[in-house]
Image (cartoon, rainbow, N blue to C red; front, side, top):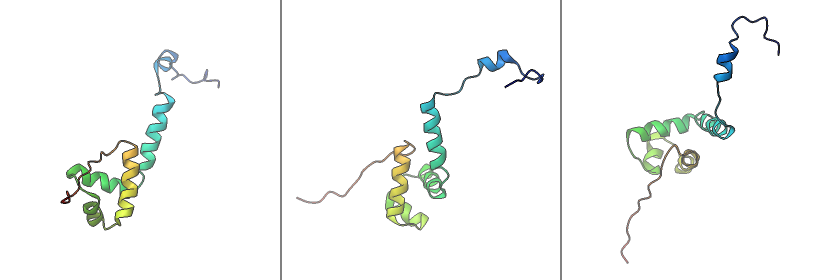
Length: 92
């Protein structure tokens, strides 16, 4: 590409510019793709305010627990949320 006519080209500055490695670009792309979902964004906003279980998220977002779990799996895979498993202890 011939940029000789462009007076703004500063080759010294351009040579100093770097871009992240391909793995980082791939991860960032996956995160941006995941955040295109309004359901996942809503989940993240709620979880920022308070730790919530799937049933609470389901109630707050008026969505099925299955849909919430599906979206949570995607967020977990991207390390955007962490899971803490809690359950009822049943008598033995």
